[in-house]
Image (cartoon, rainbow, N blue to C red; front, side, top):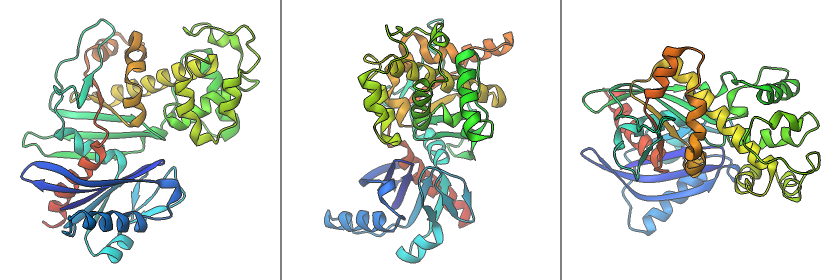
Length: 363
């Protein structure tokens, strides 16, 4: 019996998962608001109590928690929440061994459990020439996902079905630019940060809210939007009632409303178009560094919710396949890029990590 957790900037997901041979089955799960909690103690206690009420009274043999942030000294300071995850504290409170991993480490451990030919789990993004990518090979796979932040992980698939997953903070690597509008956004961020901005500030939920704020600022010139296929408003300087309503919301609530309003607001439509281009450019950048013959997996809540928008008119792939080097354009045009549809993937990955890392820990 495994207690698995996925702690993100927005949601805290916990589950009791049973493992039989190579199969993992979620027996009971609960979701909590990360911002409404101060630690993992209450969510874990609630999960175990409600599970007992449903007749699941076996204590967990091991616990694996994935969190949005680097693991240091058996702790994770969440990058988008004001509290941390302390493995020693959880062990002392509940009495079972605890393993902590990076959130995209958990997704990496879940990839071998997925069937790339099962469209309910994975959708292959068509390339710009209309071709469907081949099945991914063995070797290094890249996992990238836009959620509240931008997660990055790497996975080395092994022949025996096991895997080696490597955490990364690649979401904080540089922000790629390519035209006047993207450079203007980069300058706008740089002026506010006094540091070069990272990719997460464009290719994430946080990035969507930030791009929208820029487009509503005096620094945005409507002429910058000419290369984009977004209808220009009659009064470009005036903000619509939709824009004003979104700006009145708390920043963390804005991304979902912006995505809903792409047919009602010029700035919302341009925000989402720019978000996808930044996202694709960063994924392409990472692909050129690691040459992932095992394929690229797009995970995270935003990717799965925006599947149709990413695929429409090759919106994602047209930016992904761009590169100044001809041999890299050829490589990118043949690389399998897959969108993960299964939202429970992090919990299954944490369970798989508990088994594999638990073996290592216990010899």
